[in-house]
Length: 65
Image (cartoon, rainbow, N blue to C red; front, side):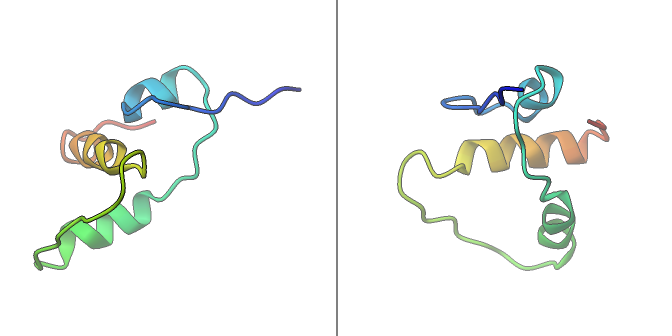
């Protein structure tokens, strides 16, 4: 059984819909969203910043994977 890795894909919905490997960290997204603090994301390119934002969008829109 081969695994599909989401190389270059930044859309949370596409990763879930197309069956790519995804490590579910939505519990961390919940904590990030409910702490009431500000965060600065400083990461090198291709380290998942856009995917995190896409995951936050899906979370706040109430979409389930």
